[in-house]
Image (cartoon, rainbow, N blue to C red):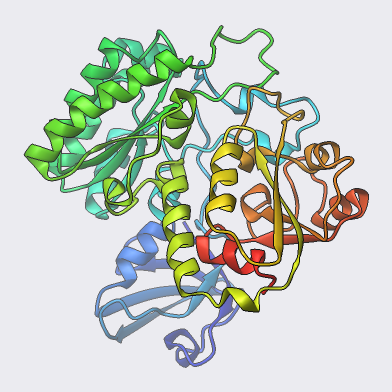
Amino acid sequence: MPQKIIAVEPGSIAEQLELRAGDLLMSVNGKRVIDWIDYQAFTSEEHIDLVIQRDGEETEYSLDKDDWEPLGLTFDSQLMSCVRECVNKCIFCFVDQLPACARDSLRVKDDDWRLSLMMGSFVTLTNVSDSELQRIVDRHASPLYVSVHATDMKLRAYMLGTERGALLMKQLNRLKAGGIQFHAQAVLCPGINDGPQLEKTIADLAALYPACQSLALVPVGLTNHREGLCGLRKYTRDEARAVLDLAEKWQKKCLKKFDSNFVFPADEFYLAAKRPVPPDEFYEDYAQIENGIGMMRLLETELEEAYGEADLDSARPGRLIIVTGVSVAPFMKSLVKRFQIPGVEVEVVPVENHFFGPNVTVTGLLTGSDLIRGLQGHTADKVLVTECMLRDQEDVFLDDMTFGEVQEKVGIPFVKVGRRGDELLDALMGR
């Protein structure tokens, strides 16, 4: 399909060819370009034949360049095609649990393997045809992030609400045969895909190692907006401990066989079980940290390193508030107590989630209205707000309230804080 060029980078190969915005890229090396994945693969070669259309006329350009040297073209969308939407009806779908007031952009259900490759988002592969699966192999699209949930294919089809969910193990074996690596996750629902089913899932995926690089175990997220949906519940402390015990059993096996723990429970399981998170070395390269795997440990490790190198006497005295979700508040309080800064008084304020409901206890899903409600009656010089509450690259909360609006209503200056431990220390010290 033709791909519209919207910009040409100055000094690039494309500028030397006198390409310009508005031109259409028709083909590369005789092949049509479906999307960004194709474009990257085709233009990585040293010899390139381009067909460009301008004002209805096509011109062919033949050029030699360095391997992987970019052409310098920008197209009208990041993917160069539409995002592929989800075809599932998962029993635990978080989008189906959104309140009526949630913005429309939150209701988009994408399930696009290309975004998995580019951004690390998880996909189910239910909307991937055999020919598209072959394209994944042909384009060496690795690693991917795959939502497995269960390797009992009948159970997986039920959980995803589509018979195509039963194709997964064939798909994963084909990816393995094609040299594609992937990270897996299982969103666990009490009494459905844990216990013996989870044991089977771990065993089946471990058998695919090293194609399957890791398996994350994540507890189901439940809001208060589940009218008409499948009856699910949160994990109890004992049930969370049972998940951790099963994971630990397999970690020992995998560490001995693969030199990797392979199975990584989410931080939420340790909080629910009231058990300490594992040490830094347990998480290896933190491959699934964006999935809530090892976030607490990495934050503490980074904070400890930064604290040991900091000039604490240079800190600005003051009274600070750190706002967090309910579940992580005890952990944050322990960090504040351990890494004290002279002249700086810090209060950790756990905020209950009213937008999604009190069952949602993670910090990243707090909204502006939650902060306004949760900070009533509190006083401080500044409020530290982690950037994980905000829309990517924008100062907007999930309820569409802006950073500035919430700050004004609270009446205390806000400071946006990055996710790293050194960034937290800088904010605590007033730098």
